[in-house]
Length: 155
Image 1 (spheres, rainbow, N blue to C red):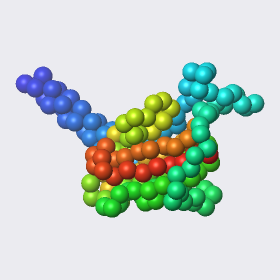
Image 2: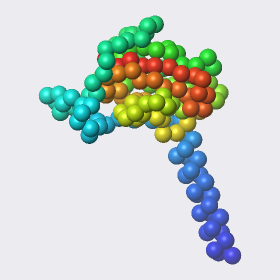
Image 3: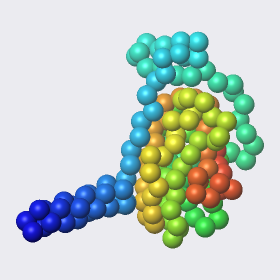
Image 4: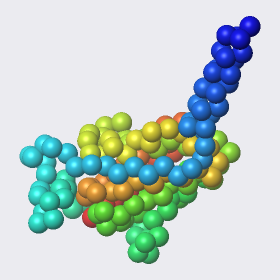
């Protein structure tokens, strides 16, 4: 009888911990770390690294005010769907829908651009913060609704 009680308490504890770690809508912060492939990297005087990229900027790109880097996920998709930020800036993705959001890099993306993949889905008002340390065009989508796509141009 005593073993059954301990087993039930253990199972309930595991269920609660699983719920707490996977469903809480606290902000997630992810920093993509530099690659080790020297052919694609430039070493600066501060020992940080950045990927070289072409200077092509897509049309209809919005440049938000300095420090205001927020992408809102709505029923109509990502807003704004495309904008520019400086290298090293962070972007907060906020889910304002009644469904889940999980940011994923474009399926053709290679590291470091594939680092954008969000570790877990977030529900309504969930936030995901990502620090963009590499220049280039970051294409992404909501993996739970793949037709919702957007781009961030990091210069």
